Image (tube, rainbow, N blue to C red; front, side):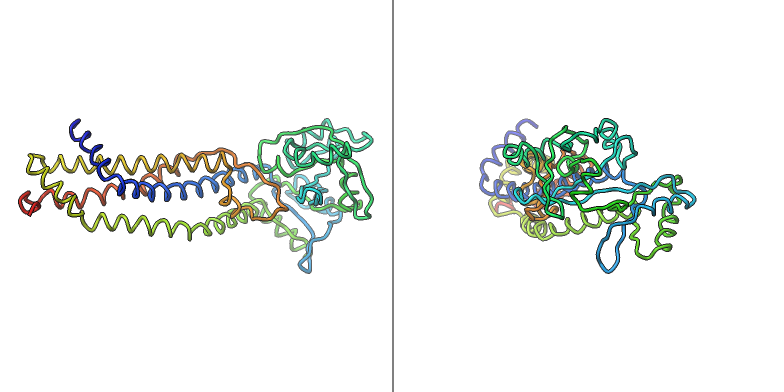
Length: 389
């Protein structure tokens, strides 16, 4: 067996250019597929993790294709519906920072009030509303983006719809468990957030509803929607389905790249499966003449194909990990999040799904090994004299 292994290594070196080409094509295919799967898996896990704290039902006001502020007194109306545990109005919105050319989310919070997310609720417990001038709590990554304003004004200037300026100091730094939230949310006192976003009392951006019995969520959502045709009612399951459809669509854009790589790879496989080259046939004939058995030749081809395919697979997956989680998947990530400069960049969190890697391995490596062994076996069972002639 040792002699067969040594001969296999020598054979790989002897046909260096051919083997290098096959390894490169194989590696590119594995790299592309692994990168797509890793990006999708990372984003999916982030959204699934965040969605655990989504409200059961989200109610907003929408008609004529436009969104409007929702009346605060509707919370009391919703609480009269049997099965609803809580109904809270939220003050939030997107704010555009002209200097930085980026949109960030502003959330208004009140001390000691229940929040839609536990991490925000902990911040609200120690939130000092009486501080003057007002202050904000945000992440280090957002402070880095707003660094220019902080150096120039010693605070962050916000402009209201009436074009008046509100200077907000930095009162603290948070770190959520989710990368998407760390790079998007600014927490402000609710009254300050209302002033910046132009949301007058008693209106809210939307209303979050929690239901006592999860099995009644759809029924209660339909009941609310029927009661007022101007209300847009979305359940947690609906939100998750929308995210999943978005990922499925975005992943489909990679199909063209995948097909190009796969066709190239399939061409190589077809070339190998259709028969060995004359020099490879002659090599097998000489080995048989020297006393090699069919099993020896099969073992030789098995080792050769395994070394090439496993090496290409490991290199492809390793490069994909480096590309996605270290370099943050430049270009490819933009297909999911868009190329707009108005979106704040986020970090792809390392989350390696070994089931996906294993599936990719068994889809590619055994296929390549099979198309290498079968032609060699067909030649090996022939007479050595016929092969050499």
